Image (cartoon, rainbow, N blue to C red; front, top):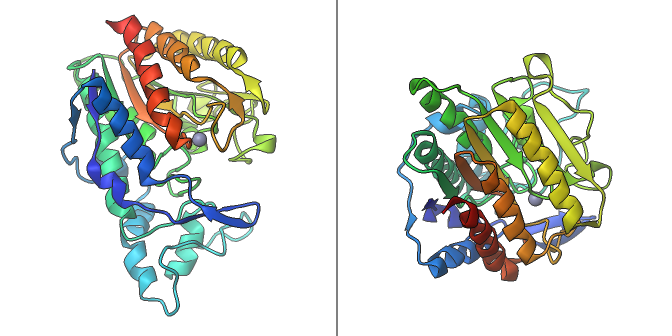
Length: 349
Ligand SMILES: [Zn+2]
């Protein structure tokens, strides 16, 4: 088991978060990563910086327009008269108007799904470091060097689609990891088949969208019912994939207040589907915002419950890339990660 974390991810510092029209401090803050790294250091494990993988891994899952926007947006925005210190669009693309503008304000609205993904001076560097973190963990596992690796990615990634940020996410780290395994598997003569299992409390709409028409990547997500929870417009049970990907997408929405045993039963159901798909590698989008004490609380998973989750994931018996997603109770993050890793190790040692 290896543990990967790029320090540059701390440079993304979104100041605020708009919730029900109110401006609040952003819960997706660098302290989240510091708490998770602290948890790893307390285990006595080595936390390694990933090497740079360049533009390739992120370009494999995101559009060129979107990546160019992310890279240049802050500089272009900051020369506008009377601009805020971070980019937050006041307009968003809609289905009736679909022309791509050249100006930065319009492009911000095009590429940012909501107001929860502000771009500041350190954002691009941080999210590229996140992609390197995910790509490195994926390389370690797909190459056979390690049975499992943990990518401490922050900000999270699973709401980012091919050309759109949203919900604290910019680069889809889990998609980067999944996509990065495929050529490595193929080069070894193994089937290029990977499953992404998303256990964050929110639906991984970005990951779903990226792989929706593909039959080489299975996407399975357990999450809060989007009728009453972010991301609202995706995550319903009838979304099963399209074209070649029909049947390679499984959503298990659960109601607000879902308790731990119901959540873990859904995990069993998801793992049965994953086993039936027969992937060579499992990528886990690991969110701790299912925690009972999370400020965005929707489910009621306890700290010991994450050890049970970890045991189940390890019990799948697959080479596994763990990719950090959400989890916003900073005081509990270290304990929840430790609990998960204890459970996970119990099956793999
Ligand atoms: Zn989440």
